[in-house]
Amino acid sequence: MLTLGQAAKETGLSKPSISKAIKTGRLSAVKTENGEYQIDPVELFRVYPVTSKPKANTLQEETLGLPNGLQAAFDAMRELLGQVEGERDDLRRRLDEEAADRRASAEEVRRLTLLITHQPKPLAVSPWLWVALVVAIIGAAVAYTRFYVLPSF
Image (cartoon, rainbow, N blue to C red; front, side, top):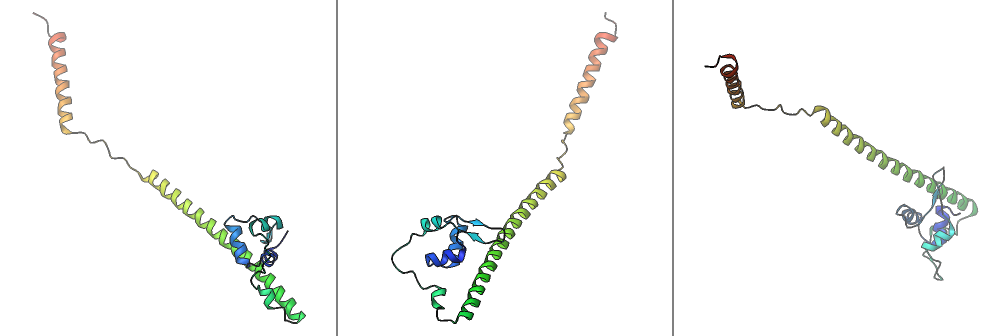
């Protein structure tokens, strides 16, 4: 398995280019517990085939003239930078997830608030309906008294 830096050296691309390919799903990789990517060489060369042309100069090639002590310090700093970039990417992903969760929660609160505060309008009853009801009751009372209460002639 290759680290992000090793994959960049093998392909001649930059670490951000390899990282972007991983994030977009073009290149698959496994993220370790400490936030570093582990890339299978077969997968790397599937996406970025090896060519006979030399790749563009990398930062490593530009610093070959450094003394051993400085080179080791430079390599350590580059590795540390890679770890910081991995942590930064992880934090960005977490922030994006948190923002999405916050938006979903706000939408749920809005929906529940609408359910709680929704007061349906009372059914408006026309005054003519009351008049018709009173007339019907009076008519029924008159009919009852005419046929059942009053004696027949």
